Structure formats: structure tokens, C-alpha cells
Length: 299
Image (cartoon, rainbow, N blue to C red; front, side, top):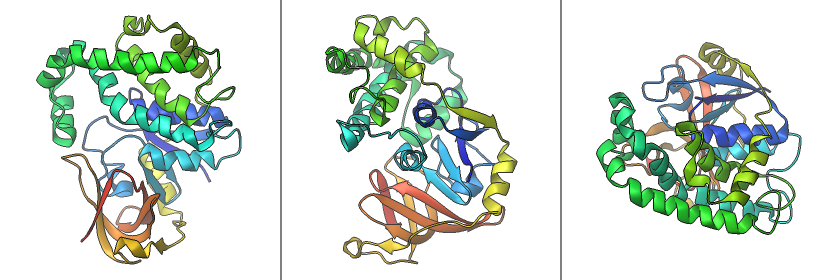
């Protein structure tokens, strides 16, 4: 079944998944979505989840890169967890998508925050509490902290390895690469990267991987793909959780302004959360989340 990626060009987390698809040499459908709410052709699939990207396979909708990356890993091609690091690569990725991410964003966007439209800041303030003035004021700190992260990346690559895990690229490379990629979105010269030659050479190797074989798809076509499919979920709820299969719940990210996605619980483990929901435009869908970073509540 077709892999459909709902994304926009300047989204760093989308670039993470685009490179992962490139490692697999995968063919995939590209649906461009707005970078701020509302997202009328995405909401019927997600139930209100607002972050980007979202990955779709038929009527199964994967929110958050940590959920989407496992779908991509299951595709034919090289593993996203190459030896010798294996699944340890996810721990490096966790640093890149977690504490390093907002320092990277601040380092890149702080100097040009005044030129970014007010609508963007209003959207990000509502979801994350990200304020233009605060970001501008913290620019020196964010640049210093991003430099500290880059020093760790440089040290890891200084032994001459081609990629973070060794000779082959994987999830860790995708996640860390997006931080450097984001700097160049705002300043292609990216002088902040200049003190780190091993990292810059590695960046070029990751960039050369490319994005696989994307083909354009409209949002309406993606809705039709969901409507014509049936969700595939192995139902199971960990009894330690205090929840049961079929229970009405809401799921929301830990972000202060996150919208709650409502449905019935199909799967809950230490790794994932899956809820079933029905929408008038697409019928039955299953919305998949990683367990980490999600708040599950009885509805």
C-alpha cells in the first residue's frame, strides 16, 4: 500500500522522514499541507493532531516521527538501525528531537524572527508557547547551546566514521541531520556550522542520500485513500495501564496548547497508542501515536 507523507517543505521533522525514505529508496506520495492551522484536509484523518509531519498508509494514520519511523523501517531496504549501534540509534535521535531541537530552532530563527509572519507566531504560541520576543531574547543562549550540541556531534564523527552508527546511515543520522538542515533553510552559508568540519562533511553525505522517489498527491486523494481502506490494528491494551480495549479516550501531546484527539482505545503498550475513530469524510481510521510524549485520558 502507498506510503503517504503529509508535510511541508520547511518542516525539519518532515526532512527527517524524507531522508529516512531516501535510505530505503522508497517510492511515496507527497501531500503538501499548511504550516499553520487550520488544516482542513488533514483533520479528518488525525482528529485534530496539529503537528507535522503525518504519515498515512491507507486508513492507518501515524502521528509523530517516532511512530512514522517504524512504518518506514518495515519497508524493504537497509535498516534504519544499522549495526553496530542498532536500536541504540533511537537514543541519539531522542536527543535531536528533544533537548537539541529547540536550541537548533532558536539558533536558526532567532536572528530573523522579525521577518516571520505574525500568523506563524500566533499558531506556535497557541501550541508550544513559542513567542517571537522570547525567541529573539534567547538567541545568544540558543546559539551557545546549539554549539554545545554540535561539539558532541563533531567529537562523535572525528574518528572518521561515515555515519553516526558506523558505516551505514540510520535514524540517528536522519534526526541529527535535520538540525543542520534547518540552519541552512534560513542561511545557506550557515556560519554557525563552520567550526565543525567533520559534521559538515557528514552533513553532505546525508544530504546526498536524497528523498527516495516522491510523487505528488492531493489532500483530496489522500482522504479517498483512507476512505477506501480498512485500518489494520492488532488490538491489545496492557492491563497495567488501567485502560481497556474499546474504552473512550482522548490522546494529546504534552505541549501546552495541544488539541485532544478523541476515539476508542485499540492498542496501548509502552511503545504505542492506537485509537479508532470515525469521521464523516473518511469513515473508520486508526490513529497511531508513540507512547512517549502522549497524555492518554478517559473521555
